[in-house]
Length: 247
Image (cartoon, rainbow, N blue to C red; front, side, top):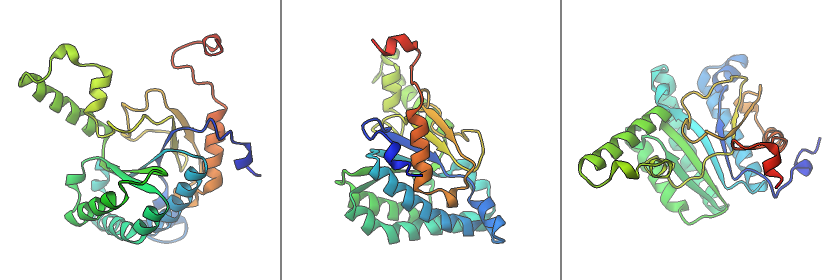
């Protein structure tokens, strides 16, 4: 089926976030170690990024590594860090040439130095690109992000640089690592799981969710198209009633 032709390109979400789940299970089904699935997941990132550009999506955020992922076997964590560095090194020229701007959210300083250096170089190289913003959530935890924002606000209040009366939703937004990124309108989770896993808890207050049984290495362009079609079938009311939306 030609899903792309059914999409209204004037009403695609500005920001799509994806919890890329199922790499390990996919690898185990193939009779391989979990890291094998992570390697194949890189191709799904390529395909999804191309599809997002076709749909004129402005921000694509990928949950690449959570703070909880440090609890995985050491060999897998080391392999993931190595994969991150090698993938950035291999892909950065194409990303730059095709107008992709790379951004990161999360506790980047907690990553190995080699990862930090590769990320910084890639961010600098692509900083002027405007085709699409690819946001990698690395060493990220929504609870960490919220606590970090609270600490910064408390510090500013204590030093009399900020009045408690000035604290608002908009001000809180400005203390988050996503401060320059719009909230996601669509959140996709692969592999059949139906949970958020500590991802963008503040930002998804009015986000539409799309869950798919597809394991991440099998997620391709049509899967993103189907998710966007599902999104376009929803009525987003933001607390209002349907009648108010038509006035």
